[in-house]
Amino acid sequence: KNSHYDTLIGYFTSWITYLVTYCCLPHVQFFNSYACWQSFLLCTEKSKISVSNSSCVCLGMYFLYWSVNLNPETELKRYFGARAVLGDQRPRQRNRQFHRSTWMTSPKDSWPRFSRPGISMTLLESKDGIQYFTFEHSRDYQQVQFKFLDAVESMDPNNIVALLQLNPYHIDSLLQLSDVCRIQEDQEMARDLIERALYSFECAFHPLFSLTSGTSRLDYLRPENRAFYLALYKHMMFLEKRGCPRTALEYCKLILSLDPDSDPLCMLLLVDFLTLRSREYHSLLQLHQDWEEHRNLSQLPNFAFSTALCHFHLSQQEDTDPEESDKQRQIADQMLQDALIMFPGVLMPLLDLCTVQADPAVTSHSFFGPKSQLGQPPALAELTALYVGRTFNLWREAAVMLWLEESVKEVLCRVNAKDPLVEDCQNKRKQRYQSAPRNIHRHVLLSEIKEATSSLPLEVTTQPVMGFDPLPPLDSVISYTRPERQHAGASNESTLSLFFRSLLPNFNLQGGPRQEDDTEVARAGQELNQEVNRLMVAMRDMLANIRFQEPPREDNPYRDEEEWD
Image 1 (cartoon, rainbow, N blue to C red):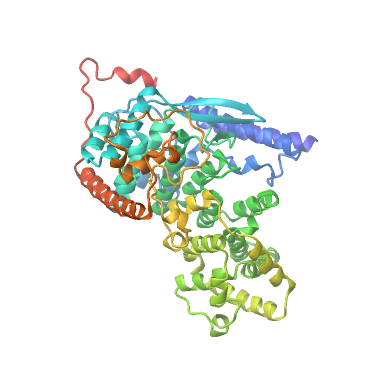
Image 2: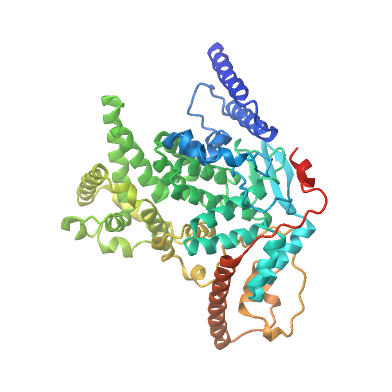
């Protein structure tokens, strides 16, 4: 008991030291740090274990981290040094027009002057130490939302330009234009638009909403919350491509913490990749150990293979004790063999992307040959393609490939010896993975991994998907509806208009203007493709000529200054 309290005092002292070191942090950051520590104590109390035990099994423990880790500059400083990262920024900060400190993004002088766009956050309830929040749209912001859909529906890019000139921080417009920039390979502009959206969100945070405690929840069923999820996801992917996998991992954990039960963007299919890229091997193994009992993570191909890869890398570390290294290698061998037996369809696509020629004894064997690909259930084929397309570069190392080759040979010996595990896994594959839930389809679409998107079912690939709300939930929680619009005639409603109305809460397909025969449906599909293509061309042209204009400030140019005090 005394040891328990001594350890607790030690952690408390470290926390006080952290606050003293960063005493200049704004109040919101202090609340984040305090919430992080409070959640840590609550988690320890509920888990009934000592604070000194780093293997806390409370789920909230995985989401505890300092807010400073959300800043990519922290990671870049470790790689290149503070002078290289901040050297060209200090002179420009003297004339910055922004005064509010934020964690996720740093406002830029090139941005339009910020004024609250009409987004706020409300605390819905607190239950069992978990706080449930939601974003809300003011009446003015709701009107902007309707104008945004009207502008896209009108097929006139000038309407979107006018909307952005008056509302440069409108979230859905920023998300949609970011996708267009990325398609045009203008990564800098695409990233800037996402950062602007995140800045607008962070300025709307509730004082009790914490990015770091792991106890703040946002319901994806509410349309107002979805844009925050998507902005975080897109920002995370930009960070990973920028060479900041550790920071991207923190954003992945943040997204997962917002709704760990439903996991609407299926971050469990990505967290292993970012953890391996960050070389946080113990973190992934701890997550697998803590969540396996209630989430069956080993039934996901990415966790089955990535945890084995973690043990292998731990066995290769030079500072590891030889006995511990041998132990890790044995665990890695066993886990990789079990993963190959459970998911044999991973091997050949993985070798193909790694440009490795497989042994003829492997390709000709029925277990790893073409039969293993054709016999996969649809959902398993989707998960397999996603994992292979995302992580194949992690398997290209010579040592890793040699280890994989040895494990494949052992698996073939076990298959030929009629190992009972082989038949057991075969039965599991037949019974499970028949259909993937909607959040997995949504994740595959967001990933844009061609190996995975090509395996999506027809009910997903045949419907249009917009970047500001891909595959919206079928049971959305509606807070406001779009007003009825006057149409020239029911038969004049375009297919694109019908699609955009379907994204809105009050859409009712049964209330459509009329029933269409097969010929009309086919013609509508062609019409949709043509209109979407025209829209993309128009948006590209608009983006190349867009200019943000700030509203004139007649009396005091700094009249909004009190907002930041």
